Image 1: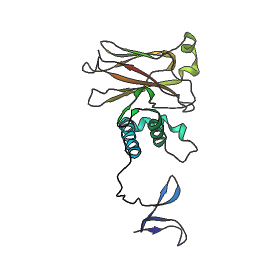
Image 2: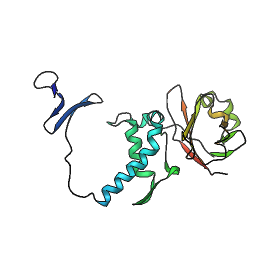
Image 3: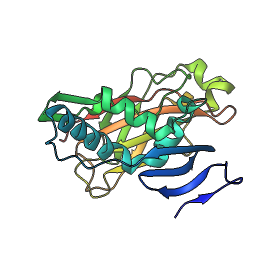
Image 4: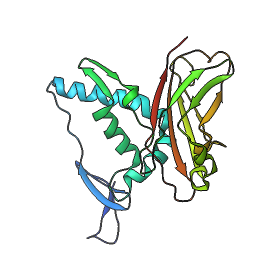
Length: 216
């Protein structure tokens, strides 16, 4: 059953026949319900479906991170941060040719924005965790504005049950290094690491940078 808003000439919410009305981001929207097709899906449709699944498998566990990391990219656009990230990854982070498509972690992003990104990013396993470093000069360590920029580290751990980890507290850009503590059963496994910066003053973020560490 549909309900009218603002009188008979206003918007409606619900289903009438094959039309549905709803509100999206403060905008009243109507759309036709999809019709089931008896035609077999084309290879292009199957490839698009596979690209969607691969992108969603990466993004879905990181929904909260993606909403923050792509927030600036969504400003002024009729799209959510997650949808912008989904569009980016479908176009840029899927490799291969259907049906041999695969997710390319090196092309993925967990944030995008105007701050300068991490340079000379490197990572290696130690007996206590993952040692991650990025470019930071002695001047950076003394610069108040640089040290206001927090460092966010996102780890994708394919061989573990939880599959990802996050650290945001107490790491500033000027430090240039962080030892990410991890349990012994994780140390030495394959990891995909993403590092980006944000600032608490303006809530701006940088593009994330990627580094891969192979299993020992």
